[in-house]
Length: 164
Image (cartoon, rainbow, N blue to C red; front, side, top):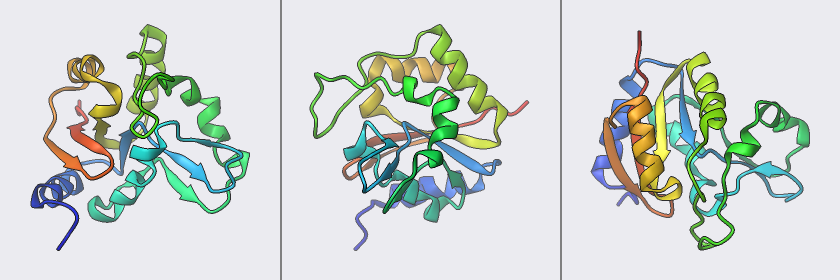
């Protein structure tokens, strides 16, 4: 009776077993009902992805708050994440997407953050980032361990972090 197919639970278990204390959902969503602030341009697809932590048991970046204070997202703004959400104003507002993939300096910012933290890997929402950007992620981080389709969020792949 679950809203998720059995493949979802299988992938969540693989994520749970992967070394690392957190999962980096990309794009992530930090949002508050007061609508004054937040980091969630892809709201329709990503508002609830933080809740997958209950299945894989890892920490995540993201949360829905009843009320949010700017100080709660300030660390992510300081790290430059606001500039990495490349929202395409011409995309479908009910299922928005990125307008392009990262340039060299954006990739550096993304990779620096990812590599400095104990992530098990990336949960990548491929319908948002587009096929070209998806391929760039695979070139940089490796092939996914699994792929699932999540209601309202679209296709998600998990790319385990390469360990040295």
